[in-house]
Image (tube, rainbow, N blue to C red; front, side, top):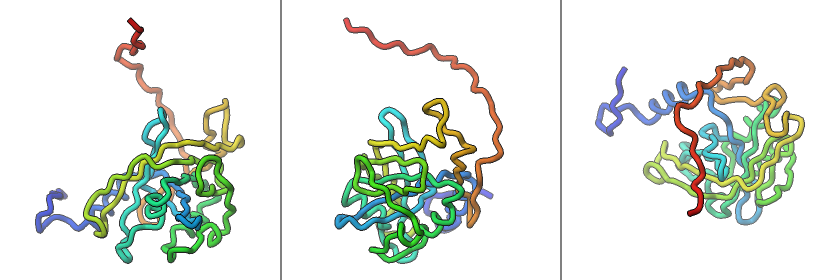
Length: 221
């Protein structure tokens, strides 16, 4: 099958494109994003369009779409626009059910922490709380929001890029000081539909050595 995505009458719907995307771009890490509104009301929601950007300085991104139910901006995005802060909490297997509860579309003002029976933990550098039960937290300040598609149209989205200003990692999932033990972390990934995956079947390949000369720092003249 060939689909020409140029807006022509015979182009597939955005829903069909979405199904192909989430069925083939897998597994996707889950960013469990906590925010607060201007009054301090907490919100917590998972996003599987999530990933790292770079480590120096450290940035992460996630991509909330326009809500299809009522074409409204998601509370997470509205809160970040208002406050410029958020926390990404890593989802583990034992937190999967709680994460799924926070994926529920709830009216504004409902605290997903309370709905899912999760504990709030104060952050060190930003206002939104962390999920106490999660072993890894990235406290972020907003760097940039890129709006894609027509505002208020179903299927449109936003790229939210945050600079990580504080990082928390529980000692129980660390080894050698700065490496994550996947067997202890037990992260889960998002597939299509209602499917998720565990990180249990691993294989290794050594990356071939670089064929590019090592960059040398420029010396002062």
